Length: 109
Figure 1: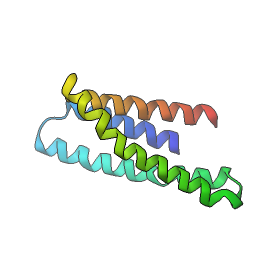
Figure 2: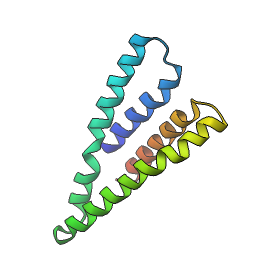
Figure 3: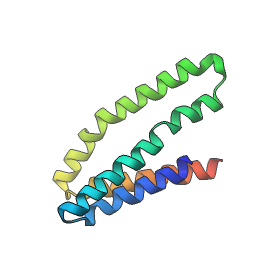
């Protein structure tokens, strides 16, 4: 499910750069929220399945810390990238990363 959800998220995110018009932007916003919400809980669930129950707290805390670090570093990397190249590049890069993660998840199952 994680691979499928990440692929859908990557596709929606990657196609956001070609969206024009308020109606399509609103639709893509809902699609982004839906796909992000679909995959949001899956990493925690997967960690719960793969880690010994005595290490759940540490493993989930590590996941949350890494996620928070990504939330801080993402704009610091993507903002200058958008300024240096083009506004669409951060969206395309994020879509490529999401699809690469999906491929990795599918490959590792």
